[in-house]
Length: 484
Ligand code: UD1
Ligand code: CA
Image (cartoon, rainbow, N blue to C red):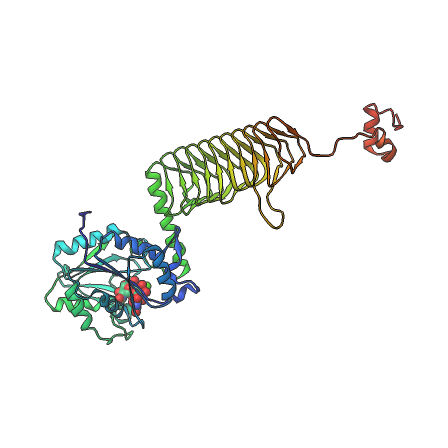
């Protein structure tokens, strides 16, 4: 099918329904799969047709939906359907925003997230090739219950009518080709057809589907385009379907990335949002979840058991058993296992954030290492500096947060506290166990701890008869009197 479908006159996205079965205070259309709202998928697919007008029909929870649209698609026109009197009534509301518009009008739903723009373009292609008044997207289901059925002419070529489940005769109910609810209409037929609708049916609603019969009555053509990929016709009505479609969306995304050169060891336990960008030769290990605006460059390995939200991972970096958000991980840098990167973490090339390390607003220079058991908040660590195990950057005095700086190639001994605001210059040392509150100059060693004092014979006097006492005696402690 021609991919280059030139723009259609209008797309109307129906989004006024109640979504009661979600049992949620959030509008159904704002629930997400693969990190994007259901509605955003409908908008993206519609935009693929390059429509002159894009109208979203809202009704239930319209404030939430309008606010969301202002965020993700401020260019769309909003139409309001005051009462939900059926899909025909919803499209009437939409057309009020399209007065005088001629040509092709595509109708689609806000809650069918796997439908692609390419499928819509195919549907438009079929519509044009046939010179149809209406072209219906359909699919064949083993269990068609609940859907409108496609009733064909006796010769099987054209669609004679669409019959809703509740109005179907047993023979019609046995038909397995169903209406996906997505159509291309000739605008004029659509207007006239909608004007002719009645509520004379089992649900007392205005059925958009009755426009099909109307068009045929006018001597115009109606064909269906049968979709092999039934997932694309699937809507979300409850959280069970939300999970099923979310899983399928993820499966499709992972397949796309694997075909683009990404190694994914265990697709079943790997989740990648639709908003994520991956390069060829990235490796994702089991239990990895990549969310938001995360990007991973070539040669990097993520996982196992890692969640990254809005994180930029650069070439050949490695991130093991880590939770990170709004962070940058530099070229060849290594993170984890068991690291927690909070917003504002920037690890430069060849740097290391190791085991049981938490960072926040931490700029860590090229080749610098924070390998073990550290909290690094509001800190700048210079190139090639080394931060000893158990170092704490104390950035909060209970009232304000302050920053500390560790200079280039400096060395902070284990179990130190760097009390901000304070600066350790380039090429300086901090002795292990220090509490640093004053600046340290270049080339200086700062020692900020009690001096060591040994008390001879203490064990013999205070721990007489213990195993320790015996060991001391065996080791030659002459002050002791342990039995020989
Ligand atoms: C409709 C079709 C049915 C098709 C099915 C596919 C009609 C009469 N029937 O069924 O043939 O198989 O979709 O899913 O069209 N909506 C509004 N305003 C309304 C009513 C619905 O905006 O007054 C929106 C809903 O939010 C939803 C969509 O239209 O996104 C479909 O509505 P829904 O009630 O789910 O479809 P059915 O009428 O059951
Ligand atoms: Ca539905």
